[in-house]
Length: 259
Image 1 (cartoon, rainbow, N blue to C red):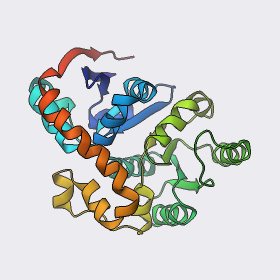
Image 2: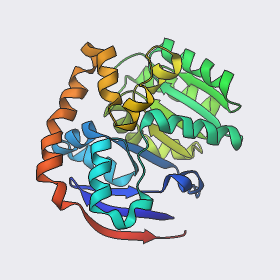
Image 3: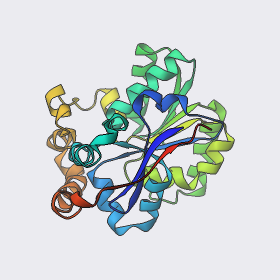
């Protein structure tokens, strides 16, 4: 498997080119994290979250992070592509439809989950199902966990997309990764509030806004009260990203392991 590895913000990034992302499954579940500025903020204060990012495969969500990495490691630019959660879900759905794979949506609200599944059924040929557990902080109550796993186990998806919001979804995936692997799930990723977009409950950002990486501000304008904390965390990390760490992104190694 070809991947670019380097250390930045004390995170050991492992980037896989987008064009081979869906050809790297070799019998062990692939955990993908879409790294944005909020992730960098949380990782500064939470060692467990930093380890999760370092031990998963990464895509670059934040446009400022992509620009900085692009300039610092220009020699390996073919390994860099920006792929946010709101874009990654469509990659998953296209891959699943072309290869007869199944997709399970876990999380969101009951309404957004139901409507997102309906949207996928109408627009894609892959098998799809979903479940939205009652809201609870981690760890989930025993009953919630039991029902959740009953739903996932009964469907046995190839791809599991988790919409609990960050960092809750990444913690949950990490804590249950071994079991998800035993179920035969091939890919798992946290995709935040993307179910709301598929469900038509929020208006997707215009292409121009997406191209400059400001979807999070667009989302904030639609849901200011629920999005204020993630936005504050993103803004907090920008000075450090631009002025303190920009000159410390170094390539540790390039892995051309073809196993």
